[in-house]
Image (cartoon, rainbow, N blue to C red; front, side, top):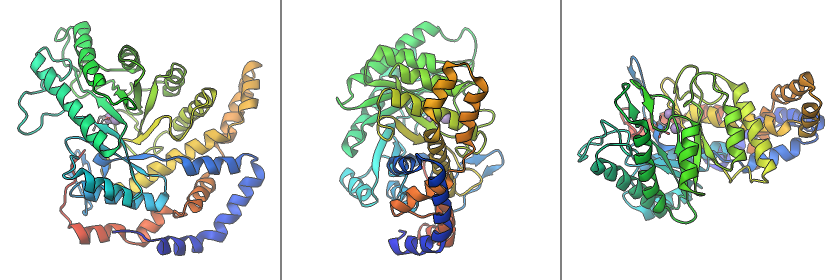
Length: 424
Ligand code: RM4
Ligand code: MN
Ligand code: MN
């Protein structure tokens, strides 16, 4: 299924005058609003190929039907999102879930949908059917060199797939760790993991980045071998200039100050990118901004400040990716909500009066500093985000149009009710 320009035009025409009124007011009140709209136009967020199907809840897996059956259909789903919001112009693939049968055809199809290939992801956190050696006791940290080699070879293979598709980064997330005290020599596990990462790093094409993703916990865990930003930073520093830390918002211990982590990693030029999601307790992979939108704003506030201090390009110098799982909502609607939440937080951060904030900080004017931040956070920026969509030919209200066009019904008609997407 494809959404054509006329359908979008019709939808926008209906909503135009009400929308226009709101934008005008915002532009009148905020001298920087026009600049914000232009920045929003450039800002793209990659969609994870593994989140286009329905994930499970404790009670079971309740698919809404029409899930993409292969990589071609996954591209088509992301293409649908992108035509609705023109902000999801990239897909992040997971190997072996997304091995293309024909690289040439997949590249052509992606181009047809206006999509690029973002970071490719390796998987040494699950034993695959037919796999020679097991990861029961870890992958890159394993005491057996043969298991480590298998994990290294897999990552190098993932780089090859990514290179063929035109991707330029790999995300390595390891669930390596231990279940009980005494099980693992932490220092040796770190060294072995580092050596494995070094071999993978050596296989990177010159213009590539490697993202080392950390996570504080796994079910049944006692220790994690890439457990926090300190450990990830250690690996990335020892590996070299092409290695960076990747921050997945759900991978921290409760109440971690993620915005401070982000600020310092940026300062050290070691922040590579993000996996956006939201959570209340653990790695819940919920819709971005659904639980703690203020935290998301504070993260973007540090990002904008830190990137500007280094004269970085907001749109291209970091990896912006969603990593979520959709259990009781339509995955496509959920992803539209996530993209919207990210763009809102970014827009609010762009509205912060930096000069005034700096002045308040230097004067220890704590109340004023808070006022400045919250003035931006409490601005309803939805019309600015909608205006950026209008400018690029996307829909003023993507979810509304998704529903009006009965997209899910159409996908079920094309693919069937009982299809299952590979991924989470
Ligand atoms: C992990 C982690 C990784 C993702 C897998 C599917 O929890 O967040 O980024 O690749 O899930
Ligand atoms: Mn992640
Ligand atoms: Mn995760």
